Image (cartoon, rainbow, N blue to C red; front, side, top):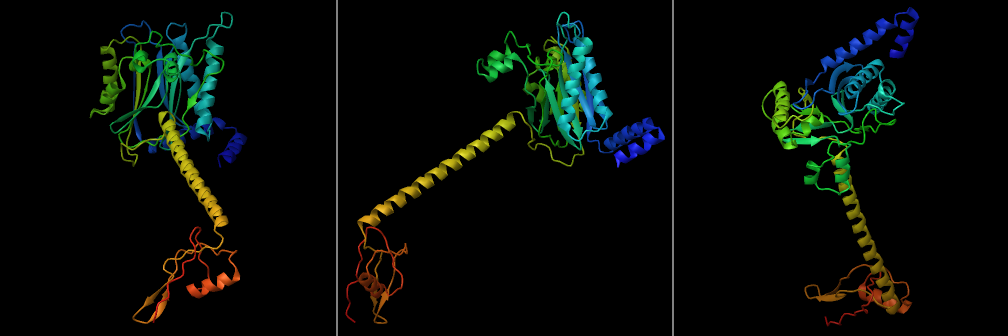
Length: 397
């Protein structure tokens, strides 16, 4: 439908009108389905002379987009790198529809990385400004997210707070390799050293969610620079997000607390509050970070137990079969029989009962078979290795 309209409008020579109409229509639909409130604020902090953080929020043909960048302090052009990244991403995502959310996000961030290097870098001195990035895309009431660097995205639902992103920092790398403890990581001298960001390398590492979050009423998404997380623990962030105040008060309180704790860096927060989702709060979300690993560990654990049980059953089966084969060879004419017959006084007749029906034994001679059939009064043999045939005692009628 869209493709046909494009051809028609191109023929008429009014493609600009169509493009504007398409964007307006998309925004209108987004507003009708809007399930969130937004708050964003940035503060220079108490130590830095310049605010190199930047953030934006826009609605596009591809959905609602939230981006936060932290220009790399101490490097010339960090502020410009953050601004350039926001500009590139907004333009790219707003231009054309993309079915695949992961592809859309990846291409937008990779283009931003390229343009930061080309427009702001100095190839002569090999100095390139850099910026961290966190991005959230809301489409069809689902939340996709991505990051590069040590800016973070949190998800709060009910009484729980989940860190969706994992810092691309030296300290986090050492922590994952178990070379330092969490206590050592908190006060590490190289805490602010990051190995991945936009601009600093030709190829940026972009971590993108594979499974979107389906938020519930009164859930929050928080995008923030390390100026917040460097001053406030996750516990303190959660205490602010789960209180009863409105979204604006929560956002302002987060910044206020970060400044009160020292404000050693620029502090930026973007808050997204969800409502009218039709879902109850406090349900577990789907994500790719720690919970994906836990899910994999659970699956691996169940798989191991399943294989172990099957191995034990198979060993038991082969052991019993081997034992049966050995006993078959050593006892060629044996049957199973529990009280083959007994005399019932009321009817003055022999009553015949049989034990376990294992299998017919092929090597019993004809005479023996006739004898067994006469005793058992059956047309089947009942065999159990190791037990000789038991003839019932004759009883006088």
